[in-house]
Length: 300
Length: 324
Ligand code: SF4
Ligand code: SF4
Image (cartoon, rainbow over all chains, first blue to last red; front, side, top):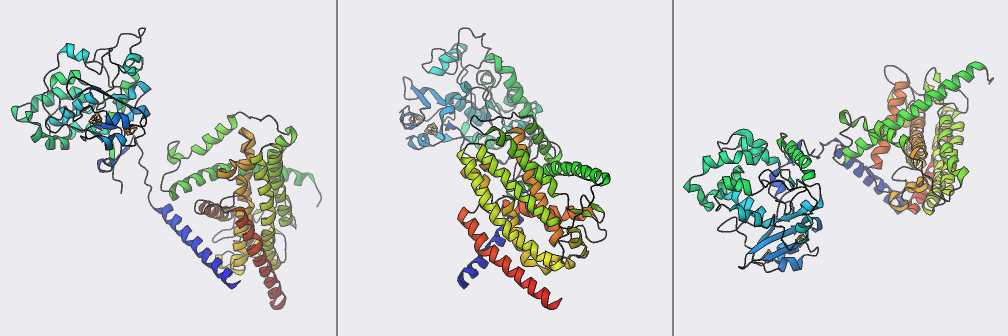
């Protein structure tokens, strides 16, 4: 009896402790980050496991380390990976269907050459499922080019048409699905607006970097790229090894002129032709978001 | 009391004001509840609609008004529609004897607290009817819990209030207020701390709020007795729940916290400040404590609150007899 009473008094005390904790939290500042107005710091993003991507090549950042062994495609529980082997070991097409991916990481773990990794992309918005089928090879090319600031041998127009990202003869289902006969003619690659809307707040960065690029980069990275290219395109920058560290910091979307036309400006290039209908909307959205001045907020 | 025309007009005006008060209270409480919940969990709560999200509650109530009143197939038609109405109207009556100020009482009667306690019991009848008429096992379980819980928690509540009634020798809410002073150390809470504590616990049980919200435990019974209600049917239950909260907070303020009396100037503002402080406390504990089990709920009531209430009443009676 006495023990029961004592237990209850102790229980009451614990209730008071609980209320003091919630009371303290009530008075402490909120932790929420209001997305369009504020963004999370990059250091915190580094621990974010976003859609997978191919790691940059060791010698040449645009070349994948993948040897087309198909281990990842077998390990994937969602069957989202399609690796097509070419004549050599290197894959000629690397498709990733993000709409089925559960971000389990099995592919990253099984890859014998370490060719896969998680990206830190959190601002991924699309308006259709088709756009979630990502061509990681062209994505790798884009990133490698941006990072290394190097001139990739210009792709002839014919090869451009035959490149996996637009090839109608591609064996994968998404590519054939995306080419309906009744669809209006697809726009040229050059005027093709960014589709897999990689809303990257950093797109506003070039204006703040050390690069002598005009500030027009705040709305469209591609528009700024020729200028950046002319400023930095000297023989010394052709060596990717010396430039990676430099450009990781600045994050300047420097691209050689031919690449600016062949490679879509966003980091995750869609594997399929976007439907022209949705283009203006997606285009508008992206520009709205990326041109908004994003206020950084520490997450302490 | 002669029911002259003047009193009739006075009551009609009071009822209209009380309806406005109930609706306004629901809007304010929804906003407060969501904001406090947000801040306790360190997020901002309603934020986007209006400045600091203040319009959010109004938008939500507009949405609720515009919603379809969906009625499931096998309900008991009359009881199904009677239940929300029955939940709403007794609450109107309960606000009548509350003294809002020295000259501001809708209906001044000698046994105000008896009226309140008697009609508060009608609320549980509506819960029972709603659960029964919905023809749904979740609703029925919720209704059964509501009845068991409300009946149980009414007893310590009455015992706690009775101690104060002993102290002041009156059941008239206005006289109870008048016997307390302006300053906090002159209030009944200092004379009857145990009764106040018992009342505080049992008012949470009486209004079916967390941690005693078993009749509508979301994780177990979807929504308990009002599972099958949508649109205005649900809105009436919702309104009456918040109005009940306001009512028990008013009673707590009148009985223990000096009612409309307060430093500087007496008036209804003090009653509202005190009542909302009690409501804030209720919201605070809702977002602090997990829901109790049903046996714990009843054990707490029958094994602790009831004996403590009886002891307190007994001690009060003896002290009153000997010393006064
Ligand atoms: S993370 Fe898992 S689900 Fe996603 S592609 Fe890799 S193996 Fe497949
Ligand atoms: S497991 Fe690695 S090397 Fe093998 S196909 Fe997949 S990405 Fe290429």
